[in-house]
Length: 272
Image 1 (cartoon, one colour):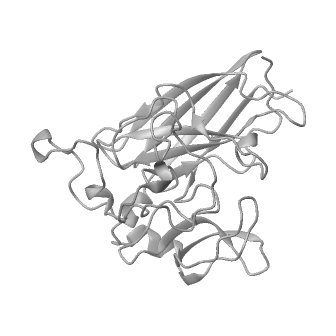
Image 2 (cartoon, helix red, strand yellow):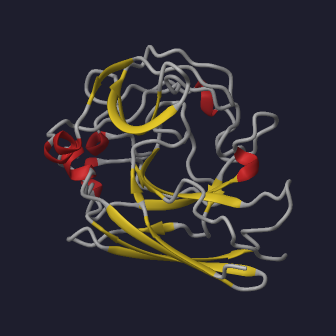
């Protein structure tokens, strides 16, 4: 039995396939770094501008994205495109669950425009309070993010340790655990944090660390609700949400920047 795992995290702007990305551009298109769904319904890891008019299937199924144009990896690194939140209600969304049922059970009824990340909605914000992120966040800056993850397995728990560089300085991030039951087509569960509290703030140079000890994250059996991916989320409202990862998720208030997938934890086992 494998007892540890170490890997580099992957740069992304994508959570699940819908919405296609958790970042928009100024024109209301999705900026996708992740799995781009092809005409034959296969997925190709790529970078592209995807129309918000792309067809949306029911949860658990796929339809090809309407690609405006593809982006080269060199173009990503130098891009000055200003990053935006996803508008509410979430465009191109087919996820049927509410992310924070106790805090905001009516999340799907809220209307909010797509906003630049540095001007994103912050509850109760006043200019006199000293907002730290005041300059536009560009695609090139986003693409500087790097992270490593180490997992050490004990009998009933596992320790997750992370080191980051190139993150957005002086801003709030959270770490999310995606479990198997959260993406099943029938009765999916909502995702949750990797540890509570699940936050970190990079220093002036974009460096940070994070640690969480998770109880029984890798149970065995065909129906076990194992952690299958870890996603690092930039928080546009600059706040954490207790046992929820956000009120809206999926680009409304959380924005995937790094992830562990695919299938990084195969062979790891814990017992409750």
